[in-house]
Image (cartoon, rainbow, N blue to C red):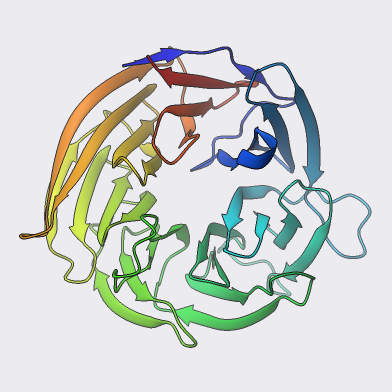
Length: 336
């Protein structure tokens, strides 16, 4: 179903972080941007669709008034809003927002770090663009920071802080199907496996909280009112977002899941884990009963590689890309 394409080389290898790959397709320019985190650097590659041109850029973690920052980056993700696209980078010190090509930093938000060192690490992780004008970012305290993004310029404001989680945020996802009918349009997950389902607005509204099972939920997606969550146990669980009803439970991987992705137009689901496997599934929702059916379609094994990032390169799931710990390349697969 899928075959391996030519890999894209990156300047540094990928760190072992959840969801350590982000992809942005720039259709008018026939380009795709890829970002992969290595320690305190974001490796960024712009690749032309014909495979002939690649350009590289590296973004350092930044802090005000410090020449070079050693603070580790936890995640880099593209955020697509109707009026603009941003690259959001989270680290141990704060949150940086760039124009999508990485050329200009438009906003910096410092994290509250305690005066005296504590046992609790401080970092930001979990990034999602929600609704018309919001970007949500999770922090290690369990809080979700909601930023209001103007259609242009750097007048970005922190509009709300959502405090429902008790443990570090691991991932955040917004409704990706584009459907306006979905009541729930944001899901947040934490290290204890708890899921919170939200409705965005002037004030974000908590619709449901699904209790954790003391197993970290490392990656989450929201599609057509359905929450798809990947866990440290190697399981994928599928919930109805508003009611929290468990629809299905899949023993998908032998080891810790690091990344999930959904192709919103086709319902293809990608899962990737420490067990060196990437699996492709198909989700279908029956509107009458709201039930979800899952079919397994395809496997790829990246031998002896702890996979840490996997993303579809387009909304139909025609191609996907994979990163692995200590690999200095992005591996790509395309449908045959």
